[in-house]
Image 1 (tube, rainbow, N blue to C red):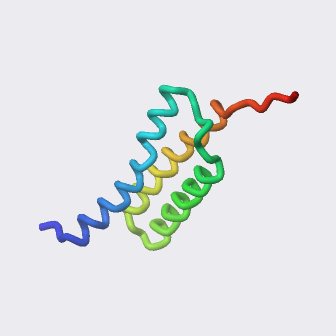
Image 2: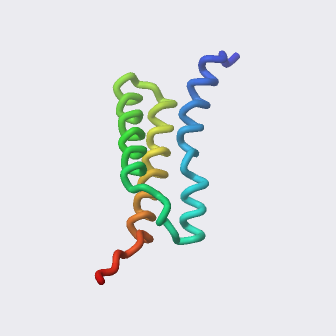
Amino acid sequence: MISFPVIVAWLAPLANCVQLVPQVYKTWTTRRVHDLSLYSLLLLLLTSLLWLLHGYFISDISLMAAGVVSVTVNLVMVTLYVMYRPVKRKL
C-alpha cells in the first residue's frame, strides 16, 4: 500500500510541473507575451533547475522526474517569450 507521504511526494512536484502549462497554451495560441515578465520566467526556470539538482543529489526519483518536466515547460515558456516579445520601436 502506498503511504500518504509518498503520494504527497509525487503530487507536490507534479503540481509544480504543470503550473505553467496553461500559460504556455495561452501564449502559444495568442502569440502575445507583453504582460509577462522575463525575469519571473527566468526565476521559475532557475527554481526548477535547483529542484532537479536537489532531487539528483538526494536520489529522489519523483523530484528528478518533476524537475525534468518543469525545466522543459519553463524552457518552452522562455522560448515563446523570446519569440513573441514586443519589439521596441525607436522614435
